[in-house]
Image 1 (spheres, rainbow, N blue to C red):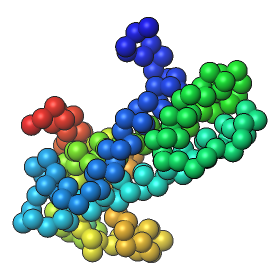
Image 2 (cartoon, helix red, strand yellow):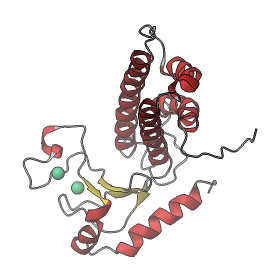
Image 3 (tube, protein in one colour):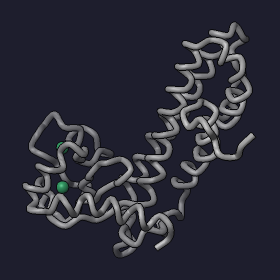
Length: 217
Ligand SMILES: [Zn+2]
Ligand SMILES: [Zn+2]
């Protein structure tokens, strides 16, 4: 037996990551968390910059809570076990871990459990990564002209944190959903950098410095 997992792609590893990290998501949402360790988000004590973080985190909690219920029910059905009792996400994850030997006897089911637990673990890590390291970038938002662009490195997304920001596309979620902020995925960064007269290298460098900061600034 080794401490470090030899099979980084196994369901047990991902379920273990979830078991460890899921409770941290709840702590990110706890009141009083506004004094986050990030030196970038503080401005006059308003909770503004932390809002998009909270949205990512609460979305992720919902997604994982639903996903774990569905996964356990699917496993029990395939293994012809009784429908699982109610339980917290942690209890369900623990029960799933206990079923993995049986799951392994069905390659299709094992593949599904592995893919789904990897997806959820990754999403959980992304949300926690976001909460730790939003990075301010130079340049003004092309929609609202505020100095309000932040990179969320793990999510590979640039976000305008100005709550009043609306883009020109009426179909964009930033119009319909008050909780949505206009965002740019990685593939759109080059164009964004041109439009903001920002520096694409700065976006990439912001990612690197965010990784450095994780070790404590
Ligand atoms: Zn904006
Ligand atoms: Zn928009």
